[in-house]
Image 1 (tube, rainbow, N blue to C red):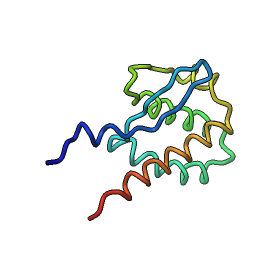
Image 2 (cartoon, rainbow, N blue to C red):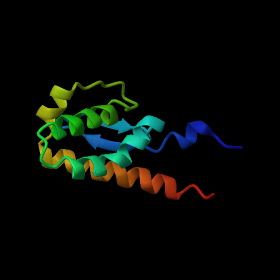
Image 3 (cartoon, helix red, strand yellow):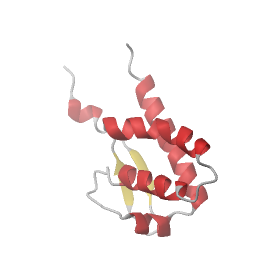
Image 4 (cartoon, rainbow, N blue to C red):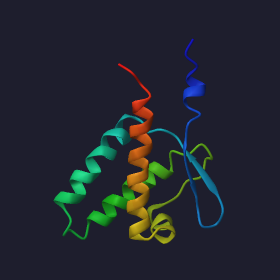
Length: 106
């Protein structure tokens, strides 16, 4: 028997500067597709000032998929994370998804 509840127990955990911990669920289809397109998007738009809005907008979607029912706005996230930390979290989230997918054998 496959227990969907148990499969959903694996989370990407982030501790915010105020001490709150977010247990972020694996991505839904939209977020999954967006995650792997972000690198291409960033590379193609490095010089565009709007890319930071795209990055923080993406991270808001990621952060708000938490099991803790904590919702953050883009402004709150921009105040919480500098650009370097935002990029580190994006990269680590991609690794989290990749590792989760490697556990699935087709």
